[in-house]
Amino acid sequence: MGDGVALADRIAERRAGVGDPRALVGELRRALVLVPYDGGGLWTAEFGGVRWVCGFTDEGALARFAAELAVVEGAGAPSRTWEYAAFRGARLLDEVIPAMGVPAGVAVNVADPDGSMLFPPVVGIVPDAVAVDADEADRGQER
Picture 1 (cartoon, rainbow, N blue to C red):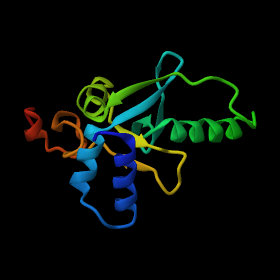
Picture 2 (picture 1 turned 135 degrees about the vertical axis):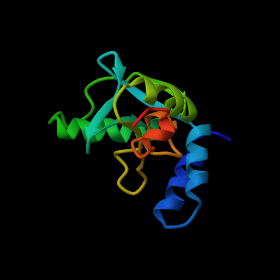
Picture 3 (picture 1 turned 90 degrees about the vertical axis):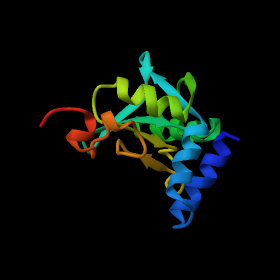
Picture 4 (picture 1 turned 30 degrees about the horizontal axis):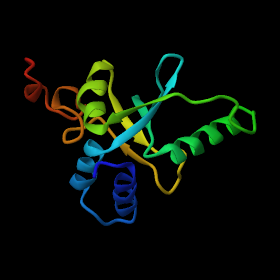
């Protein structure tokens, strides 16, 4: 329970067009997600106006990311050791994402074209206070 394999299985279900999206988010919340460090902070990427925390379901998925990055950087093979932290998905969504101060989500297994999944900063995934689709009134702010 709460392992990366179960999360990877739920991602595969959704990518195949089956499975419950709420179960997928629930599995992310329970899973241990490996997040590499980049220069002292968590590895993130900017895409589409969203800051994405890059997380991985296991060391194999992280190794595939490192290999892809090495190719992009022209190194051919990973040239460094990757340090990472293991976070419960719930902590990423409920604490780390809101602390970033910008629209942010979680990108899981980004180097696996058939096994990646984005968890965007929307209601039902991140806290309403930082969800980009939450109504201003729901955030407790005046219009």
